Length: 418
Image 1: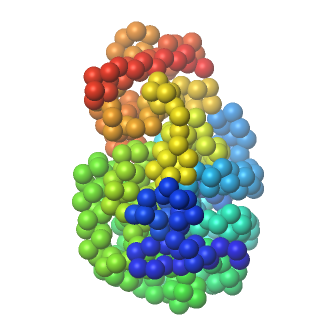
Image 2: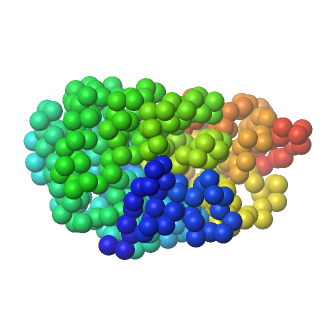
Image 3: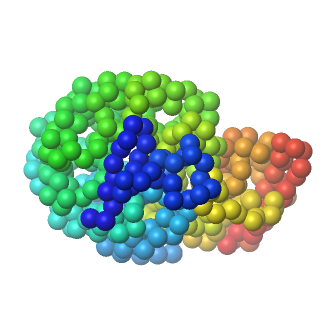
């Protein structure tokens, strides 16, 4: 292995050197962070009906999906990403397909064995990340997919099997996430995952069976100081939270972490949340359900939200500065041809510095549709990571976003529906 992750206090070292310390212009308080992205569907498959994922102008293939992620890693690395989260049971296709209808579970029902194809794909990703100097946060269990395991004993067996596999491959660039948001209602069928004391038991199994790979477990709106105490890395999620609430969560996590590193490995495309994390010296995770969690995923840095995140991250870390003019710092997103699913579109205004925006007014063929005040600026806003779709939009329509900045200046972005 070429990449060795280690922890020193609340900082991460890659090959015995603080992350980002190779960049002379990186602020000292950002050195030792692990800025990351949620690429949870890296080994995704659907053993019930994978043909329904032939969409967005592309054909889904599980092996190709993994290979395309691997190809994209170098580009993301250049902009400062040093870790990605990939899940054994993937994540939710939350905007389009009910996850309860998907079979993306590689574990046998009793948890003792893991599908060899999934392991092969995951090994490719971890190995490719190792070549670059990146870390993979391997998430074991995800919500409704955990129902394929018959009981708590099966969950323990699956934890052991996954941890043994990581150990036997001698990976040194891995962090284990026991479960993605263990306190989700979908996990209630398995008390050992849903309850903090059960997670503590699973952490103990994983630590023993993996040979000491760093471990943590994320939650939703609740936070367990008991889990934080036994974790090597305190994992938090910022999705659903406005900036002030996210700030409060990090304050709480810092007390519970007692000097250990804190990693947010799932937030949203709201770059204001990233700035909160950076201000508090905490690693942050970009999560964009539409561009990075709806298979077939376009794993590269796509136009709009992805590219603004990459540019903002690189500038924050002192890797490279952007030279975008003001009007280039906004993009009216979601009206592209390959972003339509069953005549539904998810329209939003992507921005490089969303904190500078007072409001965005969206117009359809000259008529006001909606005004947005929260980052990210979306039509049909629900929370920072989720919006409801707009329906029955015809090709050729003219859409416009009128962006009023906090200074009073106005920028207009207009596009024709493809």
